[in-house]
Length: 293
Ligand SMILES: Nc1nc2c(ncn2[C@@H]2O[C@H](COP(=O)(O)OP(=O)(O)O)[C@@H](O)[C@H]2O)c(=O)[nH]1
Ligand SMILES: [Mg+2]
Image 1: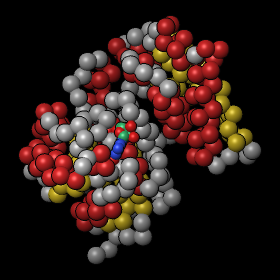
Image 2: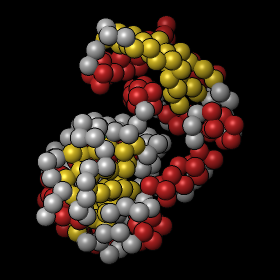
Image 3: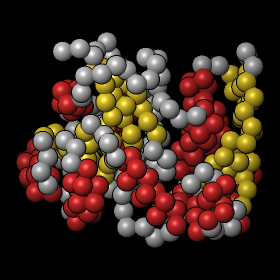
Image 4: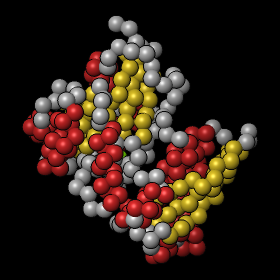
């Protein structure tokens, strides 16, 4: 067998661990992760290259019944991401238990593609031993999967097995991306996503949903990368929350984001972060377009 290459879409309800699984599969952090549903808004591709195989993973937004125009747009993206793939990984949350939301994902997004489908029963680390079998059974009841694999993106359990099962399903073919490529995300978007992840980490309730981040200017020379970014919220009250007392919250977001940007870029970063209000942007077609949705 010669070199293999192919596309894999990772789908599932919000917050089941799709982005965490993609990061674990490629062994690097490409997609941002948070404990808030609907963290992933753009389907980022993460690329795994070995000597004999290249797999291009598409991490998708959680598929759900949409409440806003943004929600509807995100659902459309999941549809695009599952077209023409060589395999699909559907992730379910073993701790929360598989249910009707997962059936909806299977019926809408997995079955119609006809691609070989694997099910990752994730967060298995949170279950007691005798709790595993019923969750594997619940996954089997969702649909006709080729394989069902208990996984933990946290401990790494099952990730190697899942990867082997995917490699077996990739067709013969040359690499699709250069061998050192990590993602197809433009740098501006990757950096904006880092800021958003840090902002999600320090906000609660409806605020995380209201946050968008845009990198307005990116200016790199040999010794320093200057990043000018706007953190966009929907209401004045939210602006106060992300800035915090005496600017403390914004400072935390900024310094955590800068540290991670320095890891990604491998050099010093200067981050200028401002907060803007864009009223009800999640429901406004023009604002959505400006933000790239
Ligand atoms: N305990 C545990 N938590 C996990 C696991 N995978 C993901 N998580 C957590 O679940 C939350 C959602 O993860 P994320 O990857 O953003 O989910 P997504 O919305 O499906 O992409 C985050 O807080 C993760 O740290 C796992 O295997 N075990
Ligand atoms: Mg995600």
